Length: 356
Image (cartoon, rainbow, N blue to C red):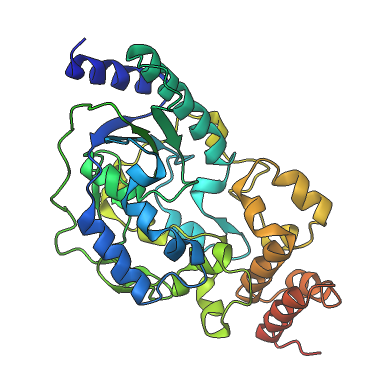
């Protein structure tokens, strides 16, 4: 079997497994590694110490998985509905906004399983000497891999001004996964040219002005960072800008013209659970810890824990229109055991002119 035929069979199997696209790149991403170093030197990564700790591994997959010659990148659509006007949902008063990628089952679980199946298929197509080495290794956002860099070099899209990978036929609402392999598979054409043109919609819309320049994101101001990665207090100056977003933010994608081509997911696991795509803030704030654990089981929402959940919803309630229900919900948490929750609850009550 020729290498080209092998690649076509791998691509065909990837489609059967639910991936929309597959490409292959080499392991040289020196230009992207320099961009990462520039980003780290300016401390744009905030408290995400692991970004700096594993910076070298991100640029050298052969150190992460010895013998790596190629990176096989795949993408899978995740948008759960056809509603492209997500900005309107962000501005809907009283409702909670949760980033579209996390409304359903934790994507790591599904993608990891499918990628493992693809890696097994590659091993069957191209058996290699059993010398104890692992010839193919799959990753889904769980190891230090510069996935957007490899995906761009594999031709899956270009990195836009909002730092997202954008595909001309599918927008940017998709997950990425990688298989590191020692097979010398044929390279697919990279996407070296960007197609953002003079558009700055994503930069202009960002509520917290997290983009310091095109292609440069200061995570410390990003709502996704503030509501997920940040484990402490949300800076008071940024709380009002968060609006009703309680887990992540899609604004820079929602306003991107290329996302008119985004495709609805075919995966049932990515569809909303427990009505989280239209849930009300008051309802979510009154969840007990048991309810939170039950309704976020198997979901990426578990990452922030119950304390982080209440912190985020408290801020969103502070930004909501004043009503007896909102004030009563916030007041019910005044004596909560967590100082972090009490701090944000007190702030929210003050926004409604309620003081201790």
